[in-house]
Amino acid sequence: MRILQLHSDYIEYEPVKKEAPNAEAADKKATRLEDILVLLTCVEKGDDESVGKAAVEEAAEFMKNLKANRVLLYPYAHLSSDLADPATALAVMKEMEKQAKALKLETFRAPFGWTKKLSIAVKGHPLAEQSRSITKESKEGKEAKPAAKKAIEREIAKLDEKSLGEKKAVMFRQARVDADELPPNDHRVIGQQMDMYSFHDAAPGMPFFHNAGMVVMNELLKYWKELHKKAGYLEVKTPIILNRKLWEISGHWDKYRENMYFTKIDDEDFAVKPMNCPGGILIFRSKVHSYRDLPIRMAELGLVHRHELSGVLSGMFRVRCFTQDDAHIFMREDQIKDEIVGVITLFTDFYKTFGFDYHIELSTRPKNSIGTDEQWAAAEKGLKEALDSEKIKYKLNPGDGAFYGPKIDFHVKDAMGRTWQCGTIQLDMTMPEKFDLNYTGADNKQHRVVMIHRTMMGSIERFMGILVEHFSGKFPVWFAPVQASVIPISEKNNKYAQKIAGELDGAGMRVEADLSANTMDYKVREAQIRKVPYMLVVGEKEEKAKSVAVRGRDGKVEYGVKLPDFVKKITEKIERKSIE
Image 1 (cartoon, rainbow, N blue to C red):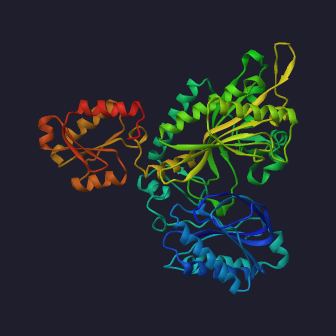
Image 2: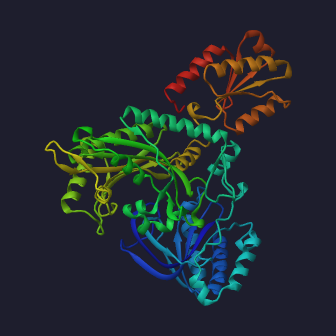
């Protein structure tokens, strides 16, 4: 069981859509609870009611120190990919509710099996956010992490009622999860096996990419750049650090400051960018534009930093430092439909390359929005017409757009049936006004630019994590870190193995020759652990025949394969980006 424990000023949630087959009855209305301990709870395979009871008992003990008595049990499946079946999960949640009431806690439970809108304000004291893992083998998290428990007890001893409300520094990071606590398909486990990336206390929530991980990233970005060049995008790059004045104009300084990092240069306030858009806007403003110049499509692979809560950090899925595959399109109002169609086509081609299914949602004007009725009507009309013209099915989410404009979201489905919101297309009515973005029209007058923000992968790091679990690390050969491993049966065959590896390298393949003193079987197992698509085993027989024995990841072996034939077959797969 995974729990994210948040001591909150308030939480507000509203059931939106049934997801689980055993979803409970619920009113589709918002519920608001104040001054409450929220237990975001994920029930995993192997958990039973005793695990749930232990979790509540530990929370109750902790609440005594905080002088809190209100608790909300909130089903939250996003903390793990090794989920219990819905029936078991609901039974455990009900037992937790029963136990909490037996402990005389004022208990609330959010409905099970629903997608819910969620808004929460976490208190500022040091113990407000913590994550825990509870299993049948160690039902009490306090026993599983004694050092963390002692640190908590020391800190509680220092706090009086006044300081509890005044301290703002978050002192506890998400506990590191050992690989043996994770399911075998978890991207953190596979990433370690394939030597792709790692995480370190020196930079919490910021992944370190190893060579194998960089190969995968570079292949993704190479494909991304090819698609965008064909679609008429201009690649740009903007600084990571920008001054306070810019962020004040964009509105981030007031509305997003808690999620930003800051520094001072020459006694002036600067911020590390959490988003790329202000930088792209400055590039657009650097020259005068005519109506003939539009649309201008700027694409940026921009490194951004966001100060996420420590308790929600989760491998590559939730990080503080990531690369966003942003693009900003500056256009005339009459170009909205065509540009949206172009973006949808681009997204569709990209997702299909990886075998992803997806569904689309259109979100319209919320209550708290900016801009005129005419602007919103034109923006929503443009998005709807683009979807309808391509006969694309979509779900309408009335009132769920961004405050600055309507949006289209792409939810991709992976091999395990999970959906991930990756792509988004947003029409923005705020930035063109804030930064006075104009173009000279045919009438020689100034007209306001219409702006689109869009990302296809969203966070490249997160998208890589999705791909790792989608393919279980068995990547298609075109972006596999190592495409072929040449394995000699004995040292006598090392020279021939090196010759084969050299020819494959010359053909443009990523290849390695395992010339270690280990046995052939050991070398094959090592290559299988690292998910290498093809193992080319060579011995005396293959050397005499000038051939190789090709072993696939499925264990099937094809003997007597001529190297030119193998190269031709694999090159064709790479060129068409086959996912076979």
